[in-house]
Image (tube, rainbow over all chains, first blue to last red; front, side, top):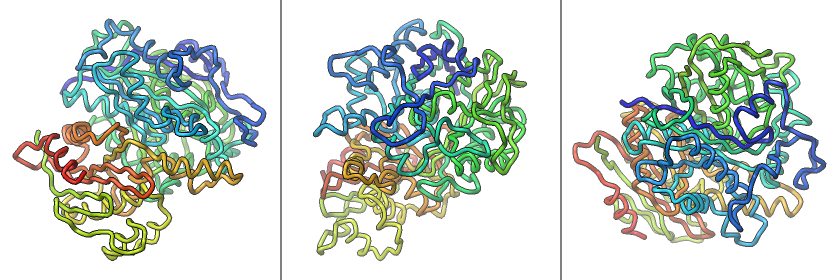
Length: 373
Length: 200
């Protein structure tokens, strides 16, 4: 089976619009989460991660915020390739999003609301050779998109696949998480004793996977393996035993013949809710990952839903490349039942293997393994 | 690698077909999906809490999996890959109305993700395998079968329950199939499209 390479990083998030600028900000301990008086009319003290409007140029007259975000990432990722391959039949774009243009729900039958519109918009705007695929699988959408991209390449369906994860912060999602009492006051504290919930953030991020490393102008890394697994337990609460997450990690490492102790860095989901973080600590213990340096990036730009998997893989690869694992922002006092090796200060990884995990509503879990350097 | 179609089920406009044969029709006063639930003698109280999209997926999975010889597979060897056009839009509107009326409903909000129906199916049948939910403009047999094929190539599944579920008010459009890679004869996207269109 062919190797799968990954590169051509792009990002738009509350901390900025280039991977290096945002990484530098995170190294300085900056958070893009800010206090907003009644954000989107919702009565909450939870900080939100909003992308500064000046970073999102209007693509077309009637294009939406999310579509403009997708466009920016598409263009920036393509600019890091030796040619724009996506106008040919051997290239594919995968869009990962939970809610798409959900800010248009207040209008009466706004044609921009149904998700397939995103696919048409991208195909028409950039003259794409294939209709983009949309993956909408809750908070694992991004990781699932990356896994799906690699599998399509290995099965020789496409040579190059760009994965763009994107979601906005809206009245709809903010009110929903508020109704679930899942929003934290202030800034989230993944794995901390005082954690109270999540922050929502908006982001778009792109990566290109390819069987041909020569298409990348800059650096690239290797995708090794990935898997998803359902908890088969509850639609909105994670399994207390971490069953699905544990299985997705096992099914990622085993075929790659990589042992848990060989992992140099684990980028976890770490939303900052009581149940999620606890579940992860149990699943990581069961998977032999308790000693692996681990962090959650949610304190830097919030939970970016469908974008989370892509942006967090992207910065995970960046951290591995720079040999600078970022501190898990907001973690002060350990507050989950199993021990974890949470990154407290910028640290260098001691192997080239990077593991990303994600979990979401619907009992879904996913893991993906990369080799950097 | 070739794919085999083990069994398929179609739920459309008050009728249920299994492998192309009419299985039952909407006869009573009950809502359509609840009527099928009773017809097949199910006892699963969680069904009544589900939104209409999940109910459709749940019934379709029930009808398809009962003819799929599931016992031949380990609990993580069957993947569930679903797709539709409208995501969870019906429930999105219901939730949004609850928000505008002043009391945002958390239980409705949970159903504003399309993959919740996949979660419901996995809970019911204890499936720990791969999941995916694709949004496509129309029933896209090629993409669905591509997903089956790549799962088989990657050794990530031995069988896939694929589904297409659309709900628009009282109108239902469900198509479900159990796909394996054990077949010797190639199975094509065009054949699956023809089966879907047969009752369209």
